[in-house]
Image 1: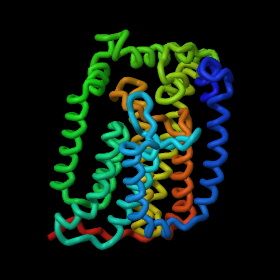
Image 2 (image 1 turned 90 degrees about the vertical axis):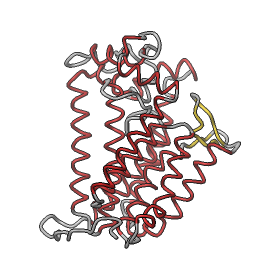
Image 3 (image 1 turned 45 degrees about the vertical axis):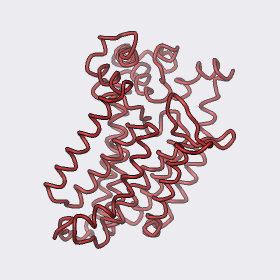
Length: 354
């Protein structure tokens, strides 16, 4: 699908229809090797690295804002460039945030609210830096991971509701007070109001999905990749899948993703320890929310946030990190207890109990 989506663009920009797919394939080989290695690396050893990795992540995010190594594209400085190589640190934040919170939630916590806030303050420093890049999509995704993990941990309802309302207010204000994000929000509410401007991408996505009908126009025969649909090889590759493989192909992909998420959640319930359980929940939320936001933007059920579709969209940093995350998760799977042998977990006390 990536070859179909990027072939014409590769010829136009670089003179080769294999430009994108060959580079993605090379990173996929590295990522699969890394995944296989990490699947045998005990995830418990990562607990000691949680804090150093989070502060390293904060440093990398700061480099994208305040260093000559920062690389700007499409109005955002989300990448670090070393010669011909570039890397998007915010992709790795999906792991470091989940790892740090898994360690925090699985160890004894301070007895006061203030102590707990100080413990998780570095996470919000990181989120602020990512938001400044600007990258509201990744910031919102990570906030969703934080919210989901503390909910599973049994945080008191009033704290959870207050945190959820704060997140919703922050995201809403961030969209309303930014002209670019405001245009995206208005395009989501009524893309037909500006069909040649802010609503163009959404409407072209609708046309692509509609054109596929039940069985699609055939692999490689889609028209959306002929510069009708912007970013078809990245954020909107699902629209091309719907066009070329039809409803059958699109719904099959959704079912595959749903099966993956179900199996990840099932594994989390059989993790050997609290750290593994919370880490599995964090990684599952990371995948599930990214898939939901991407598909929501393509189908018009959510505002477009610029998040790639895991394992399919063009993006070497995203693919490498996704395979890295899956390697860590596979080690949790290897160590998971059989359902019949899994002990019933004792209820955990609420966070920040005085």
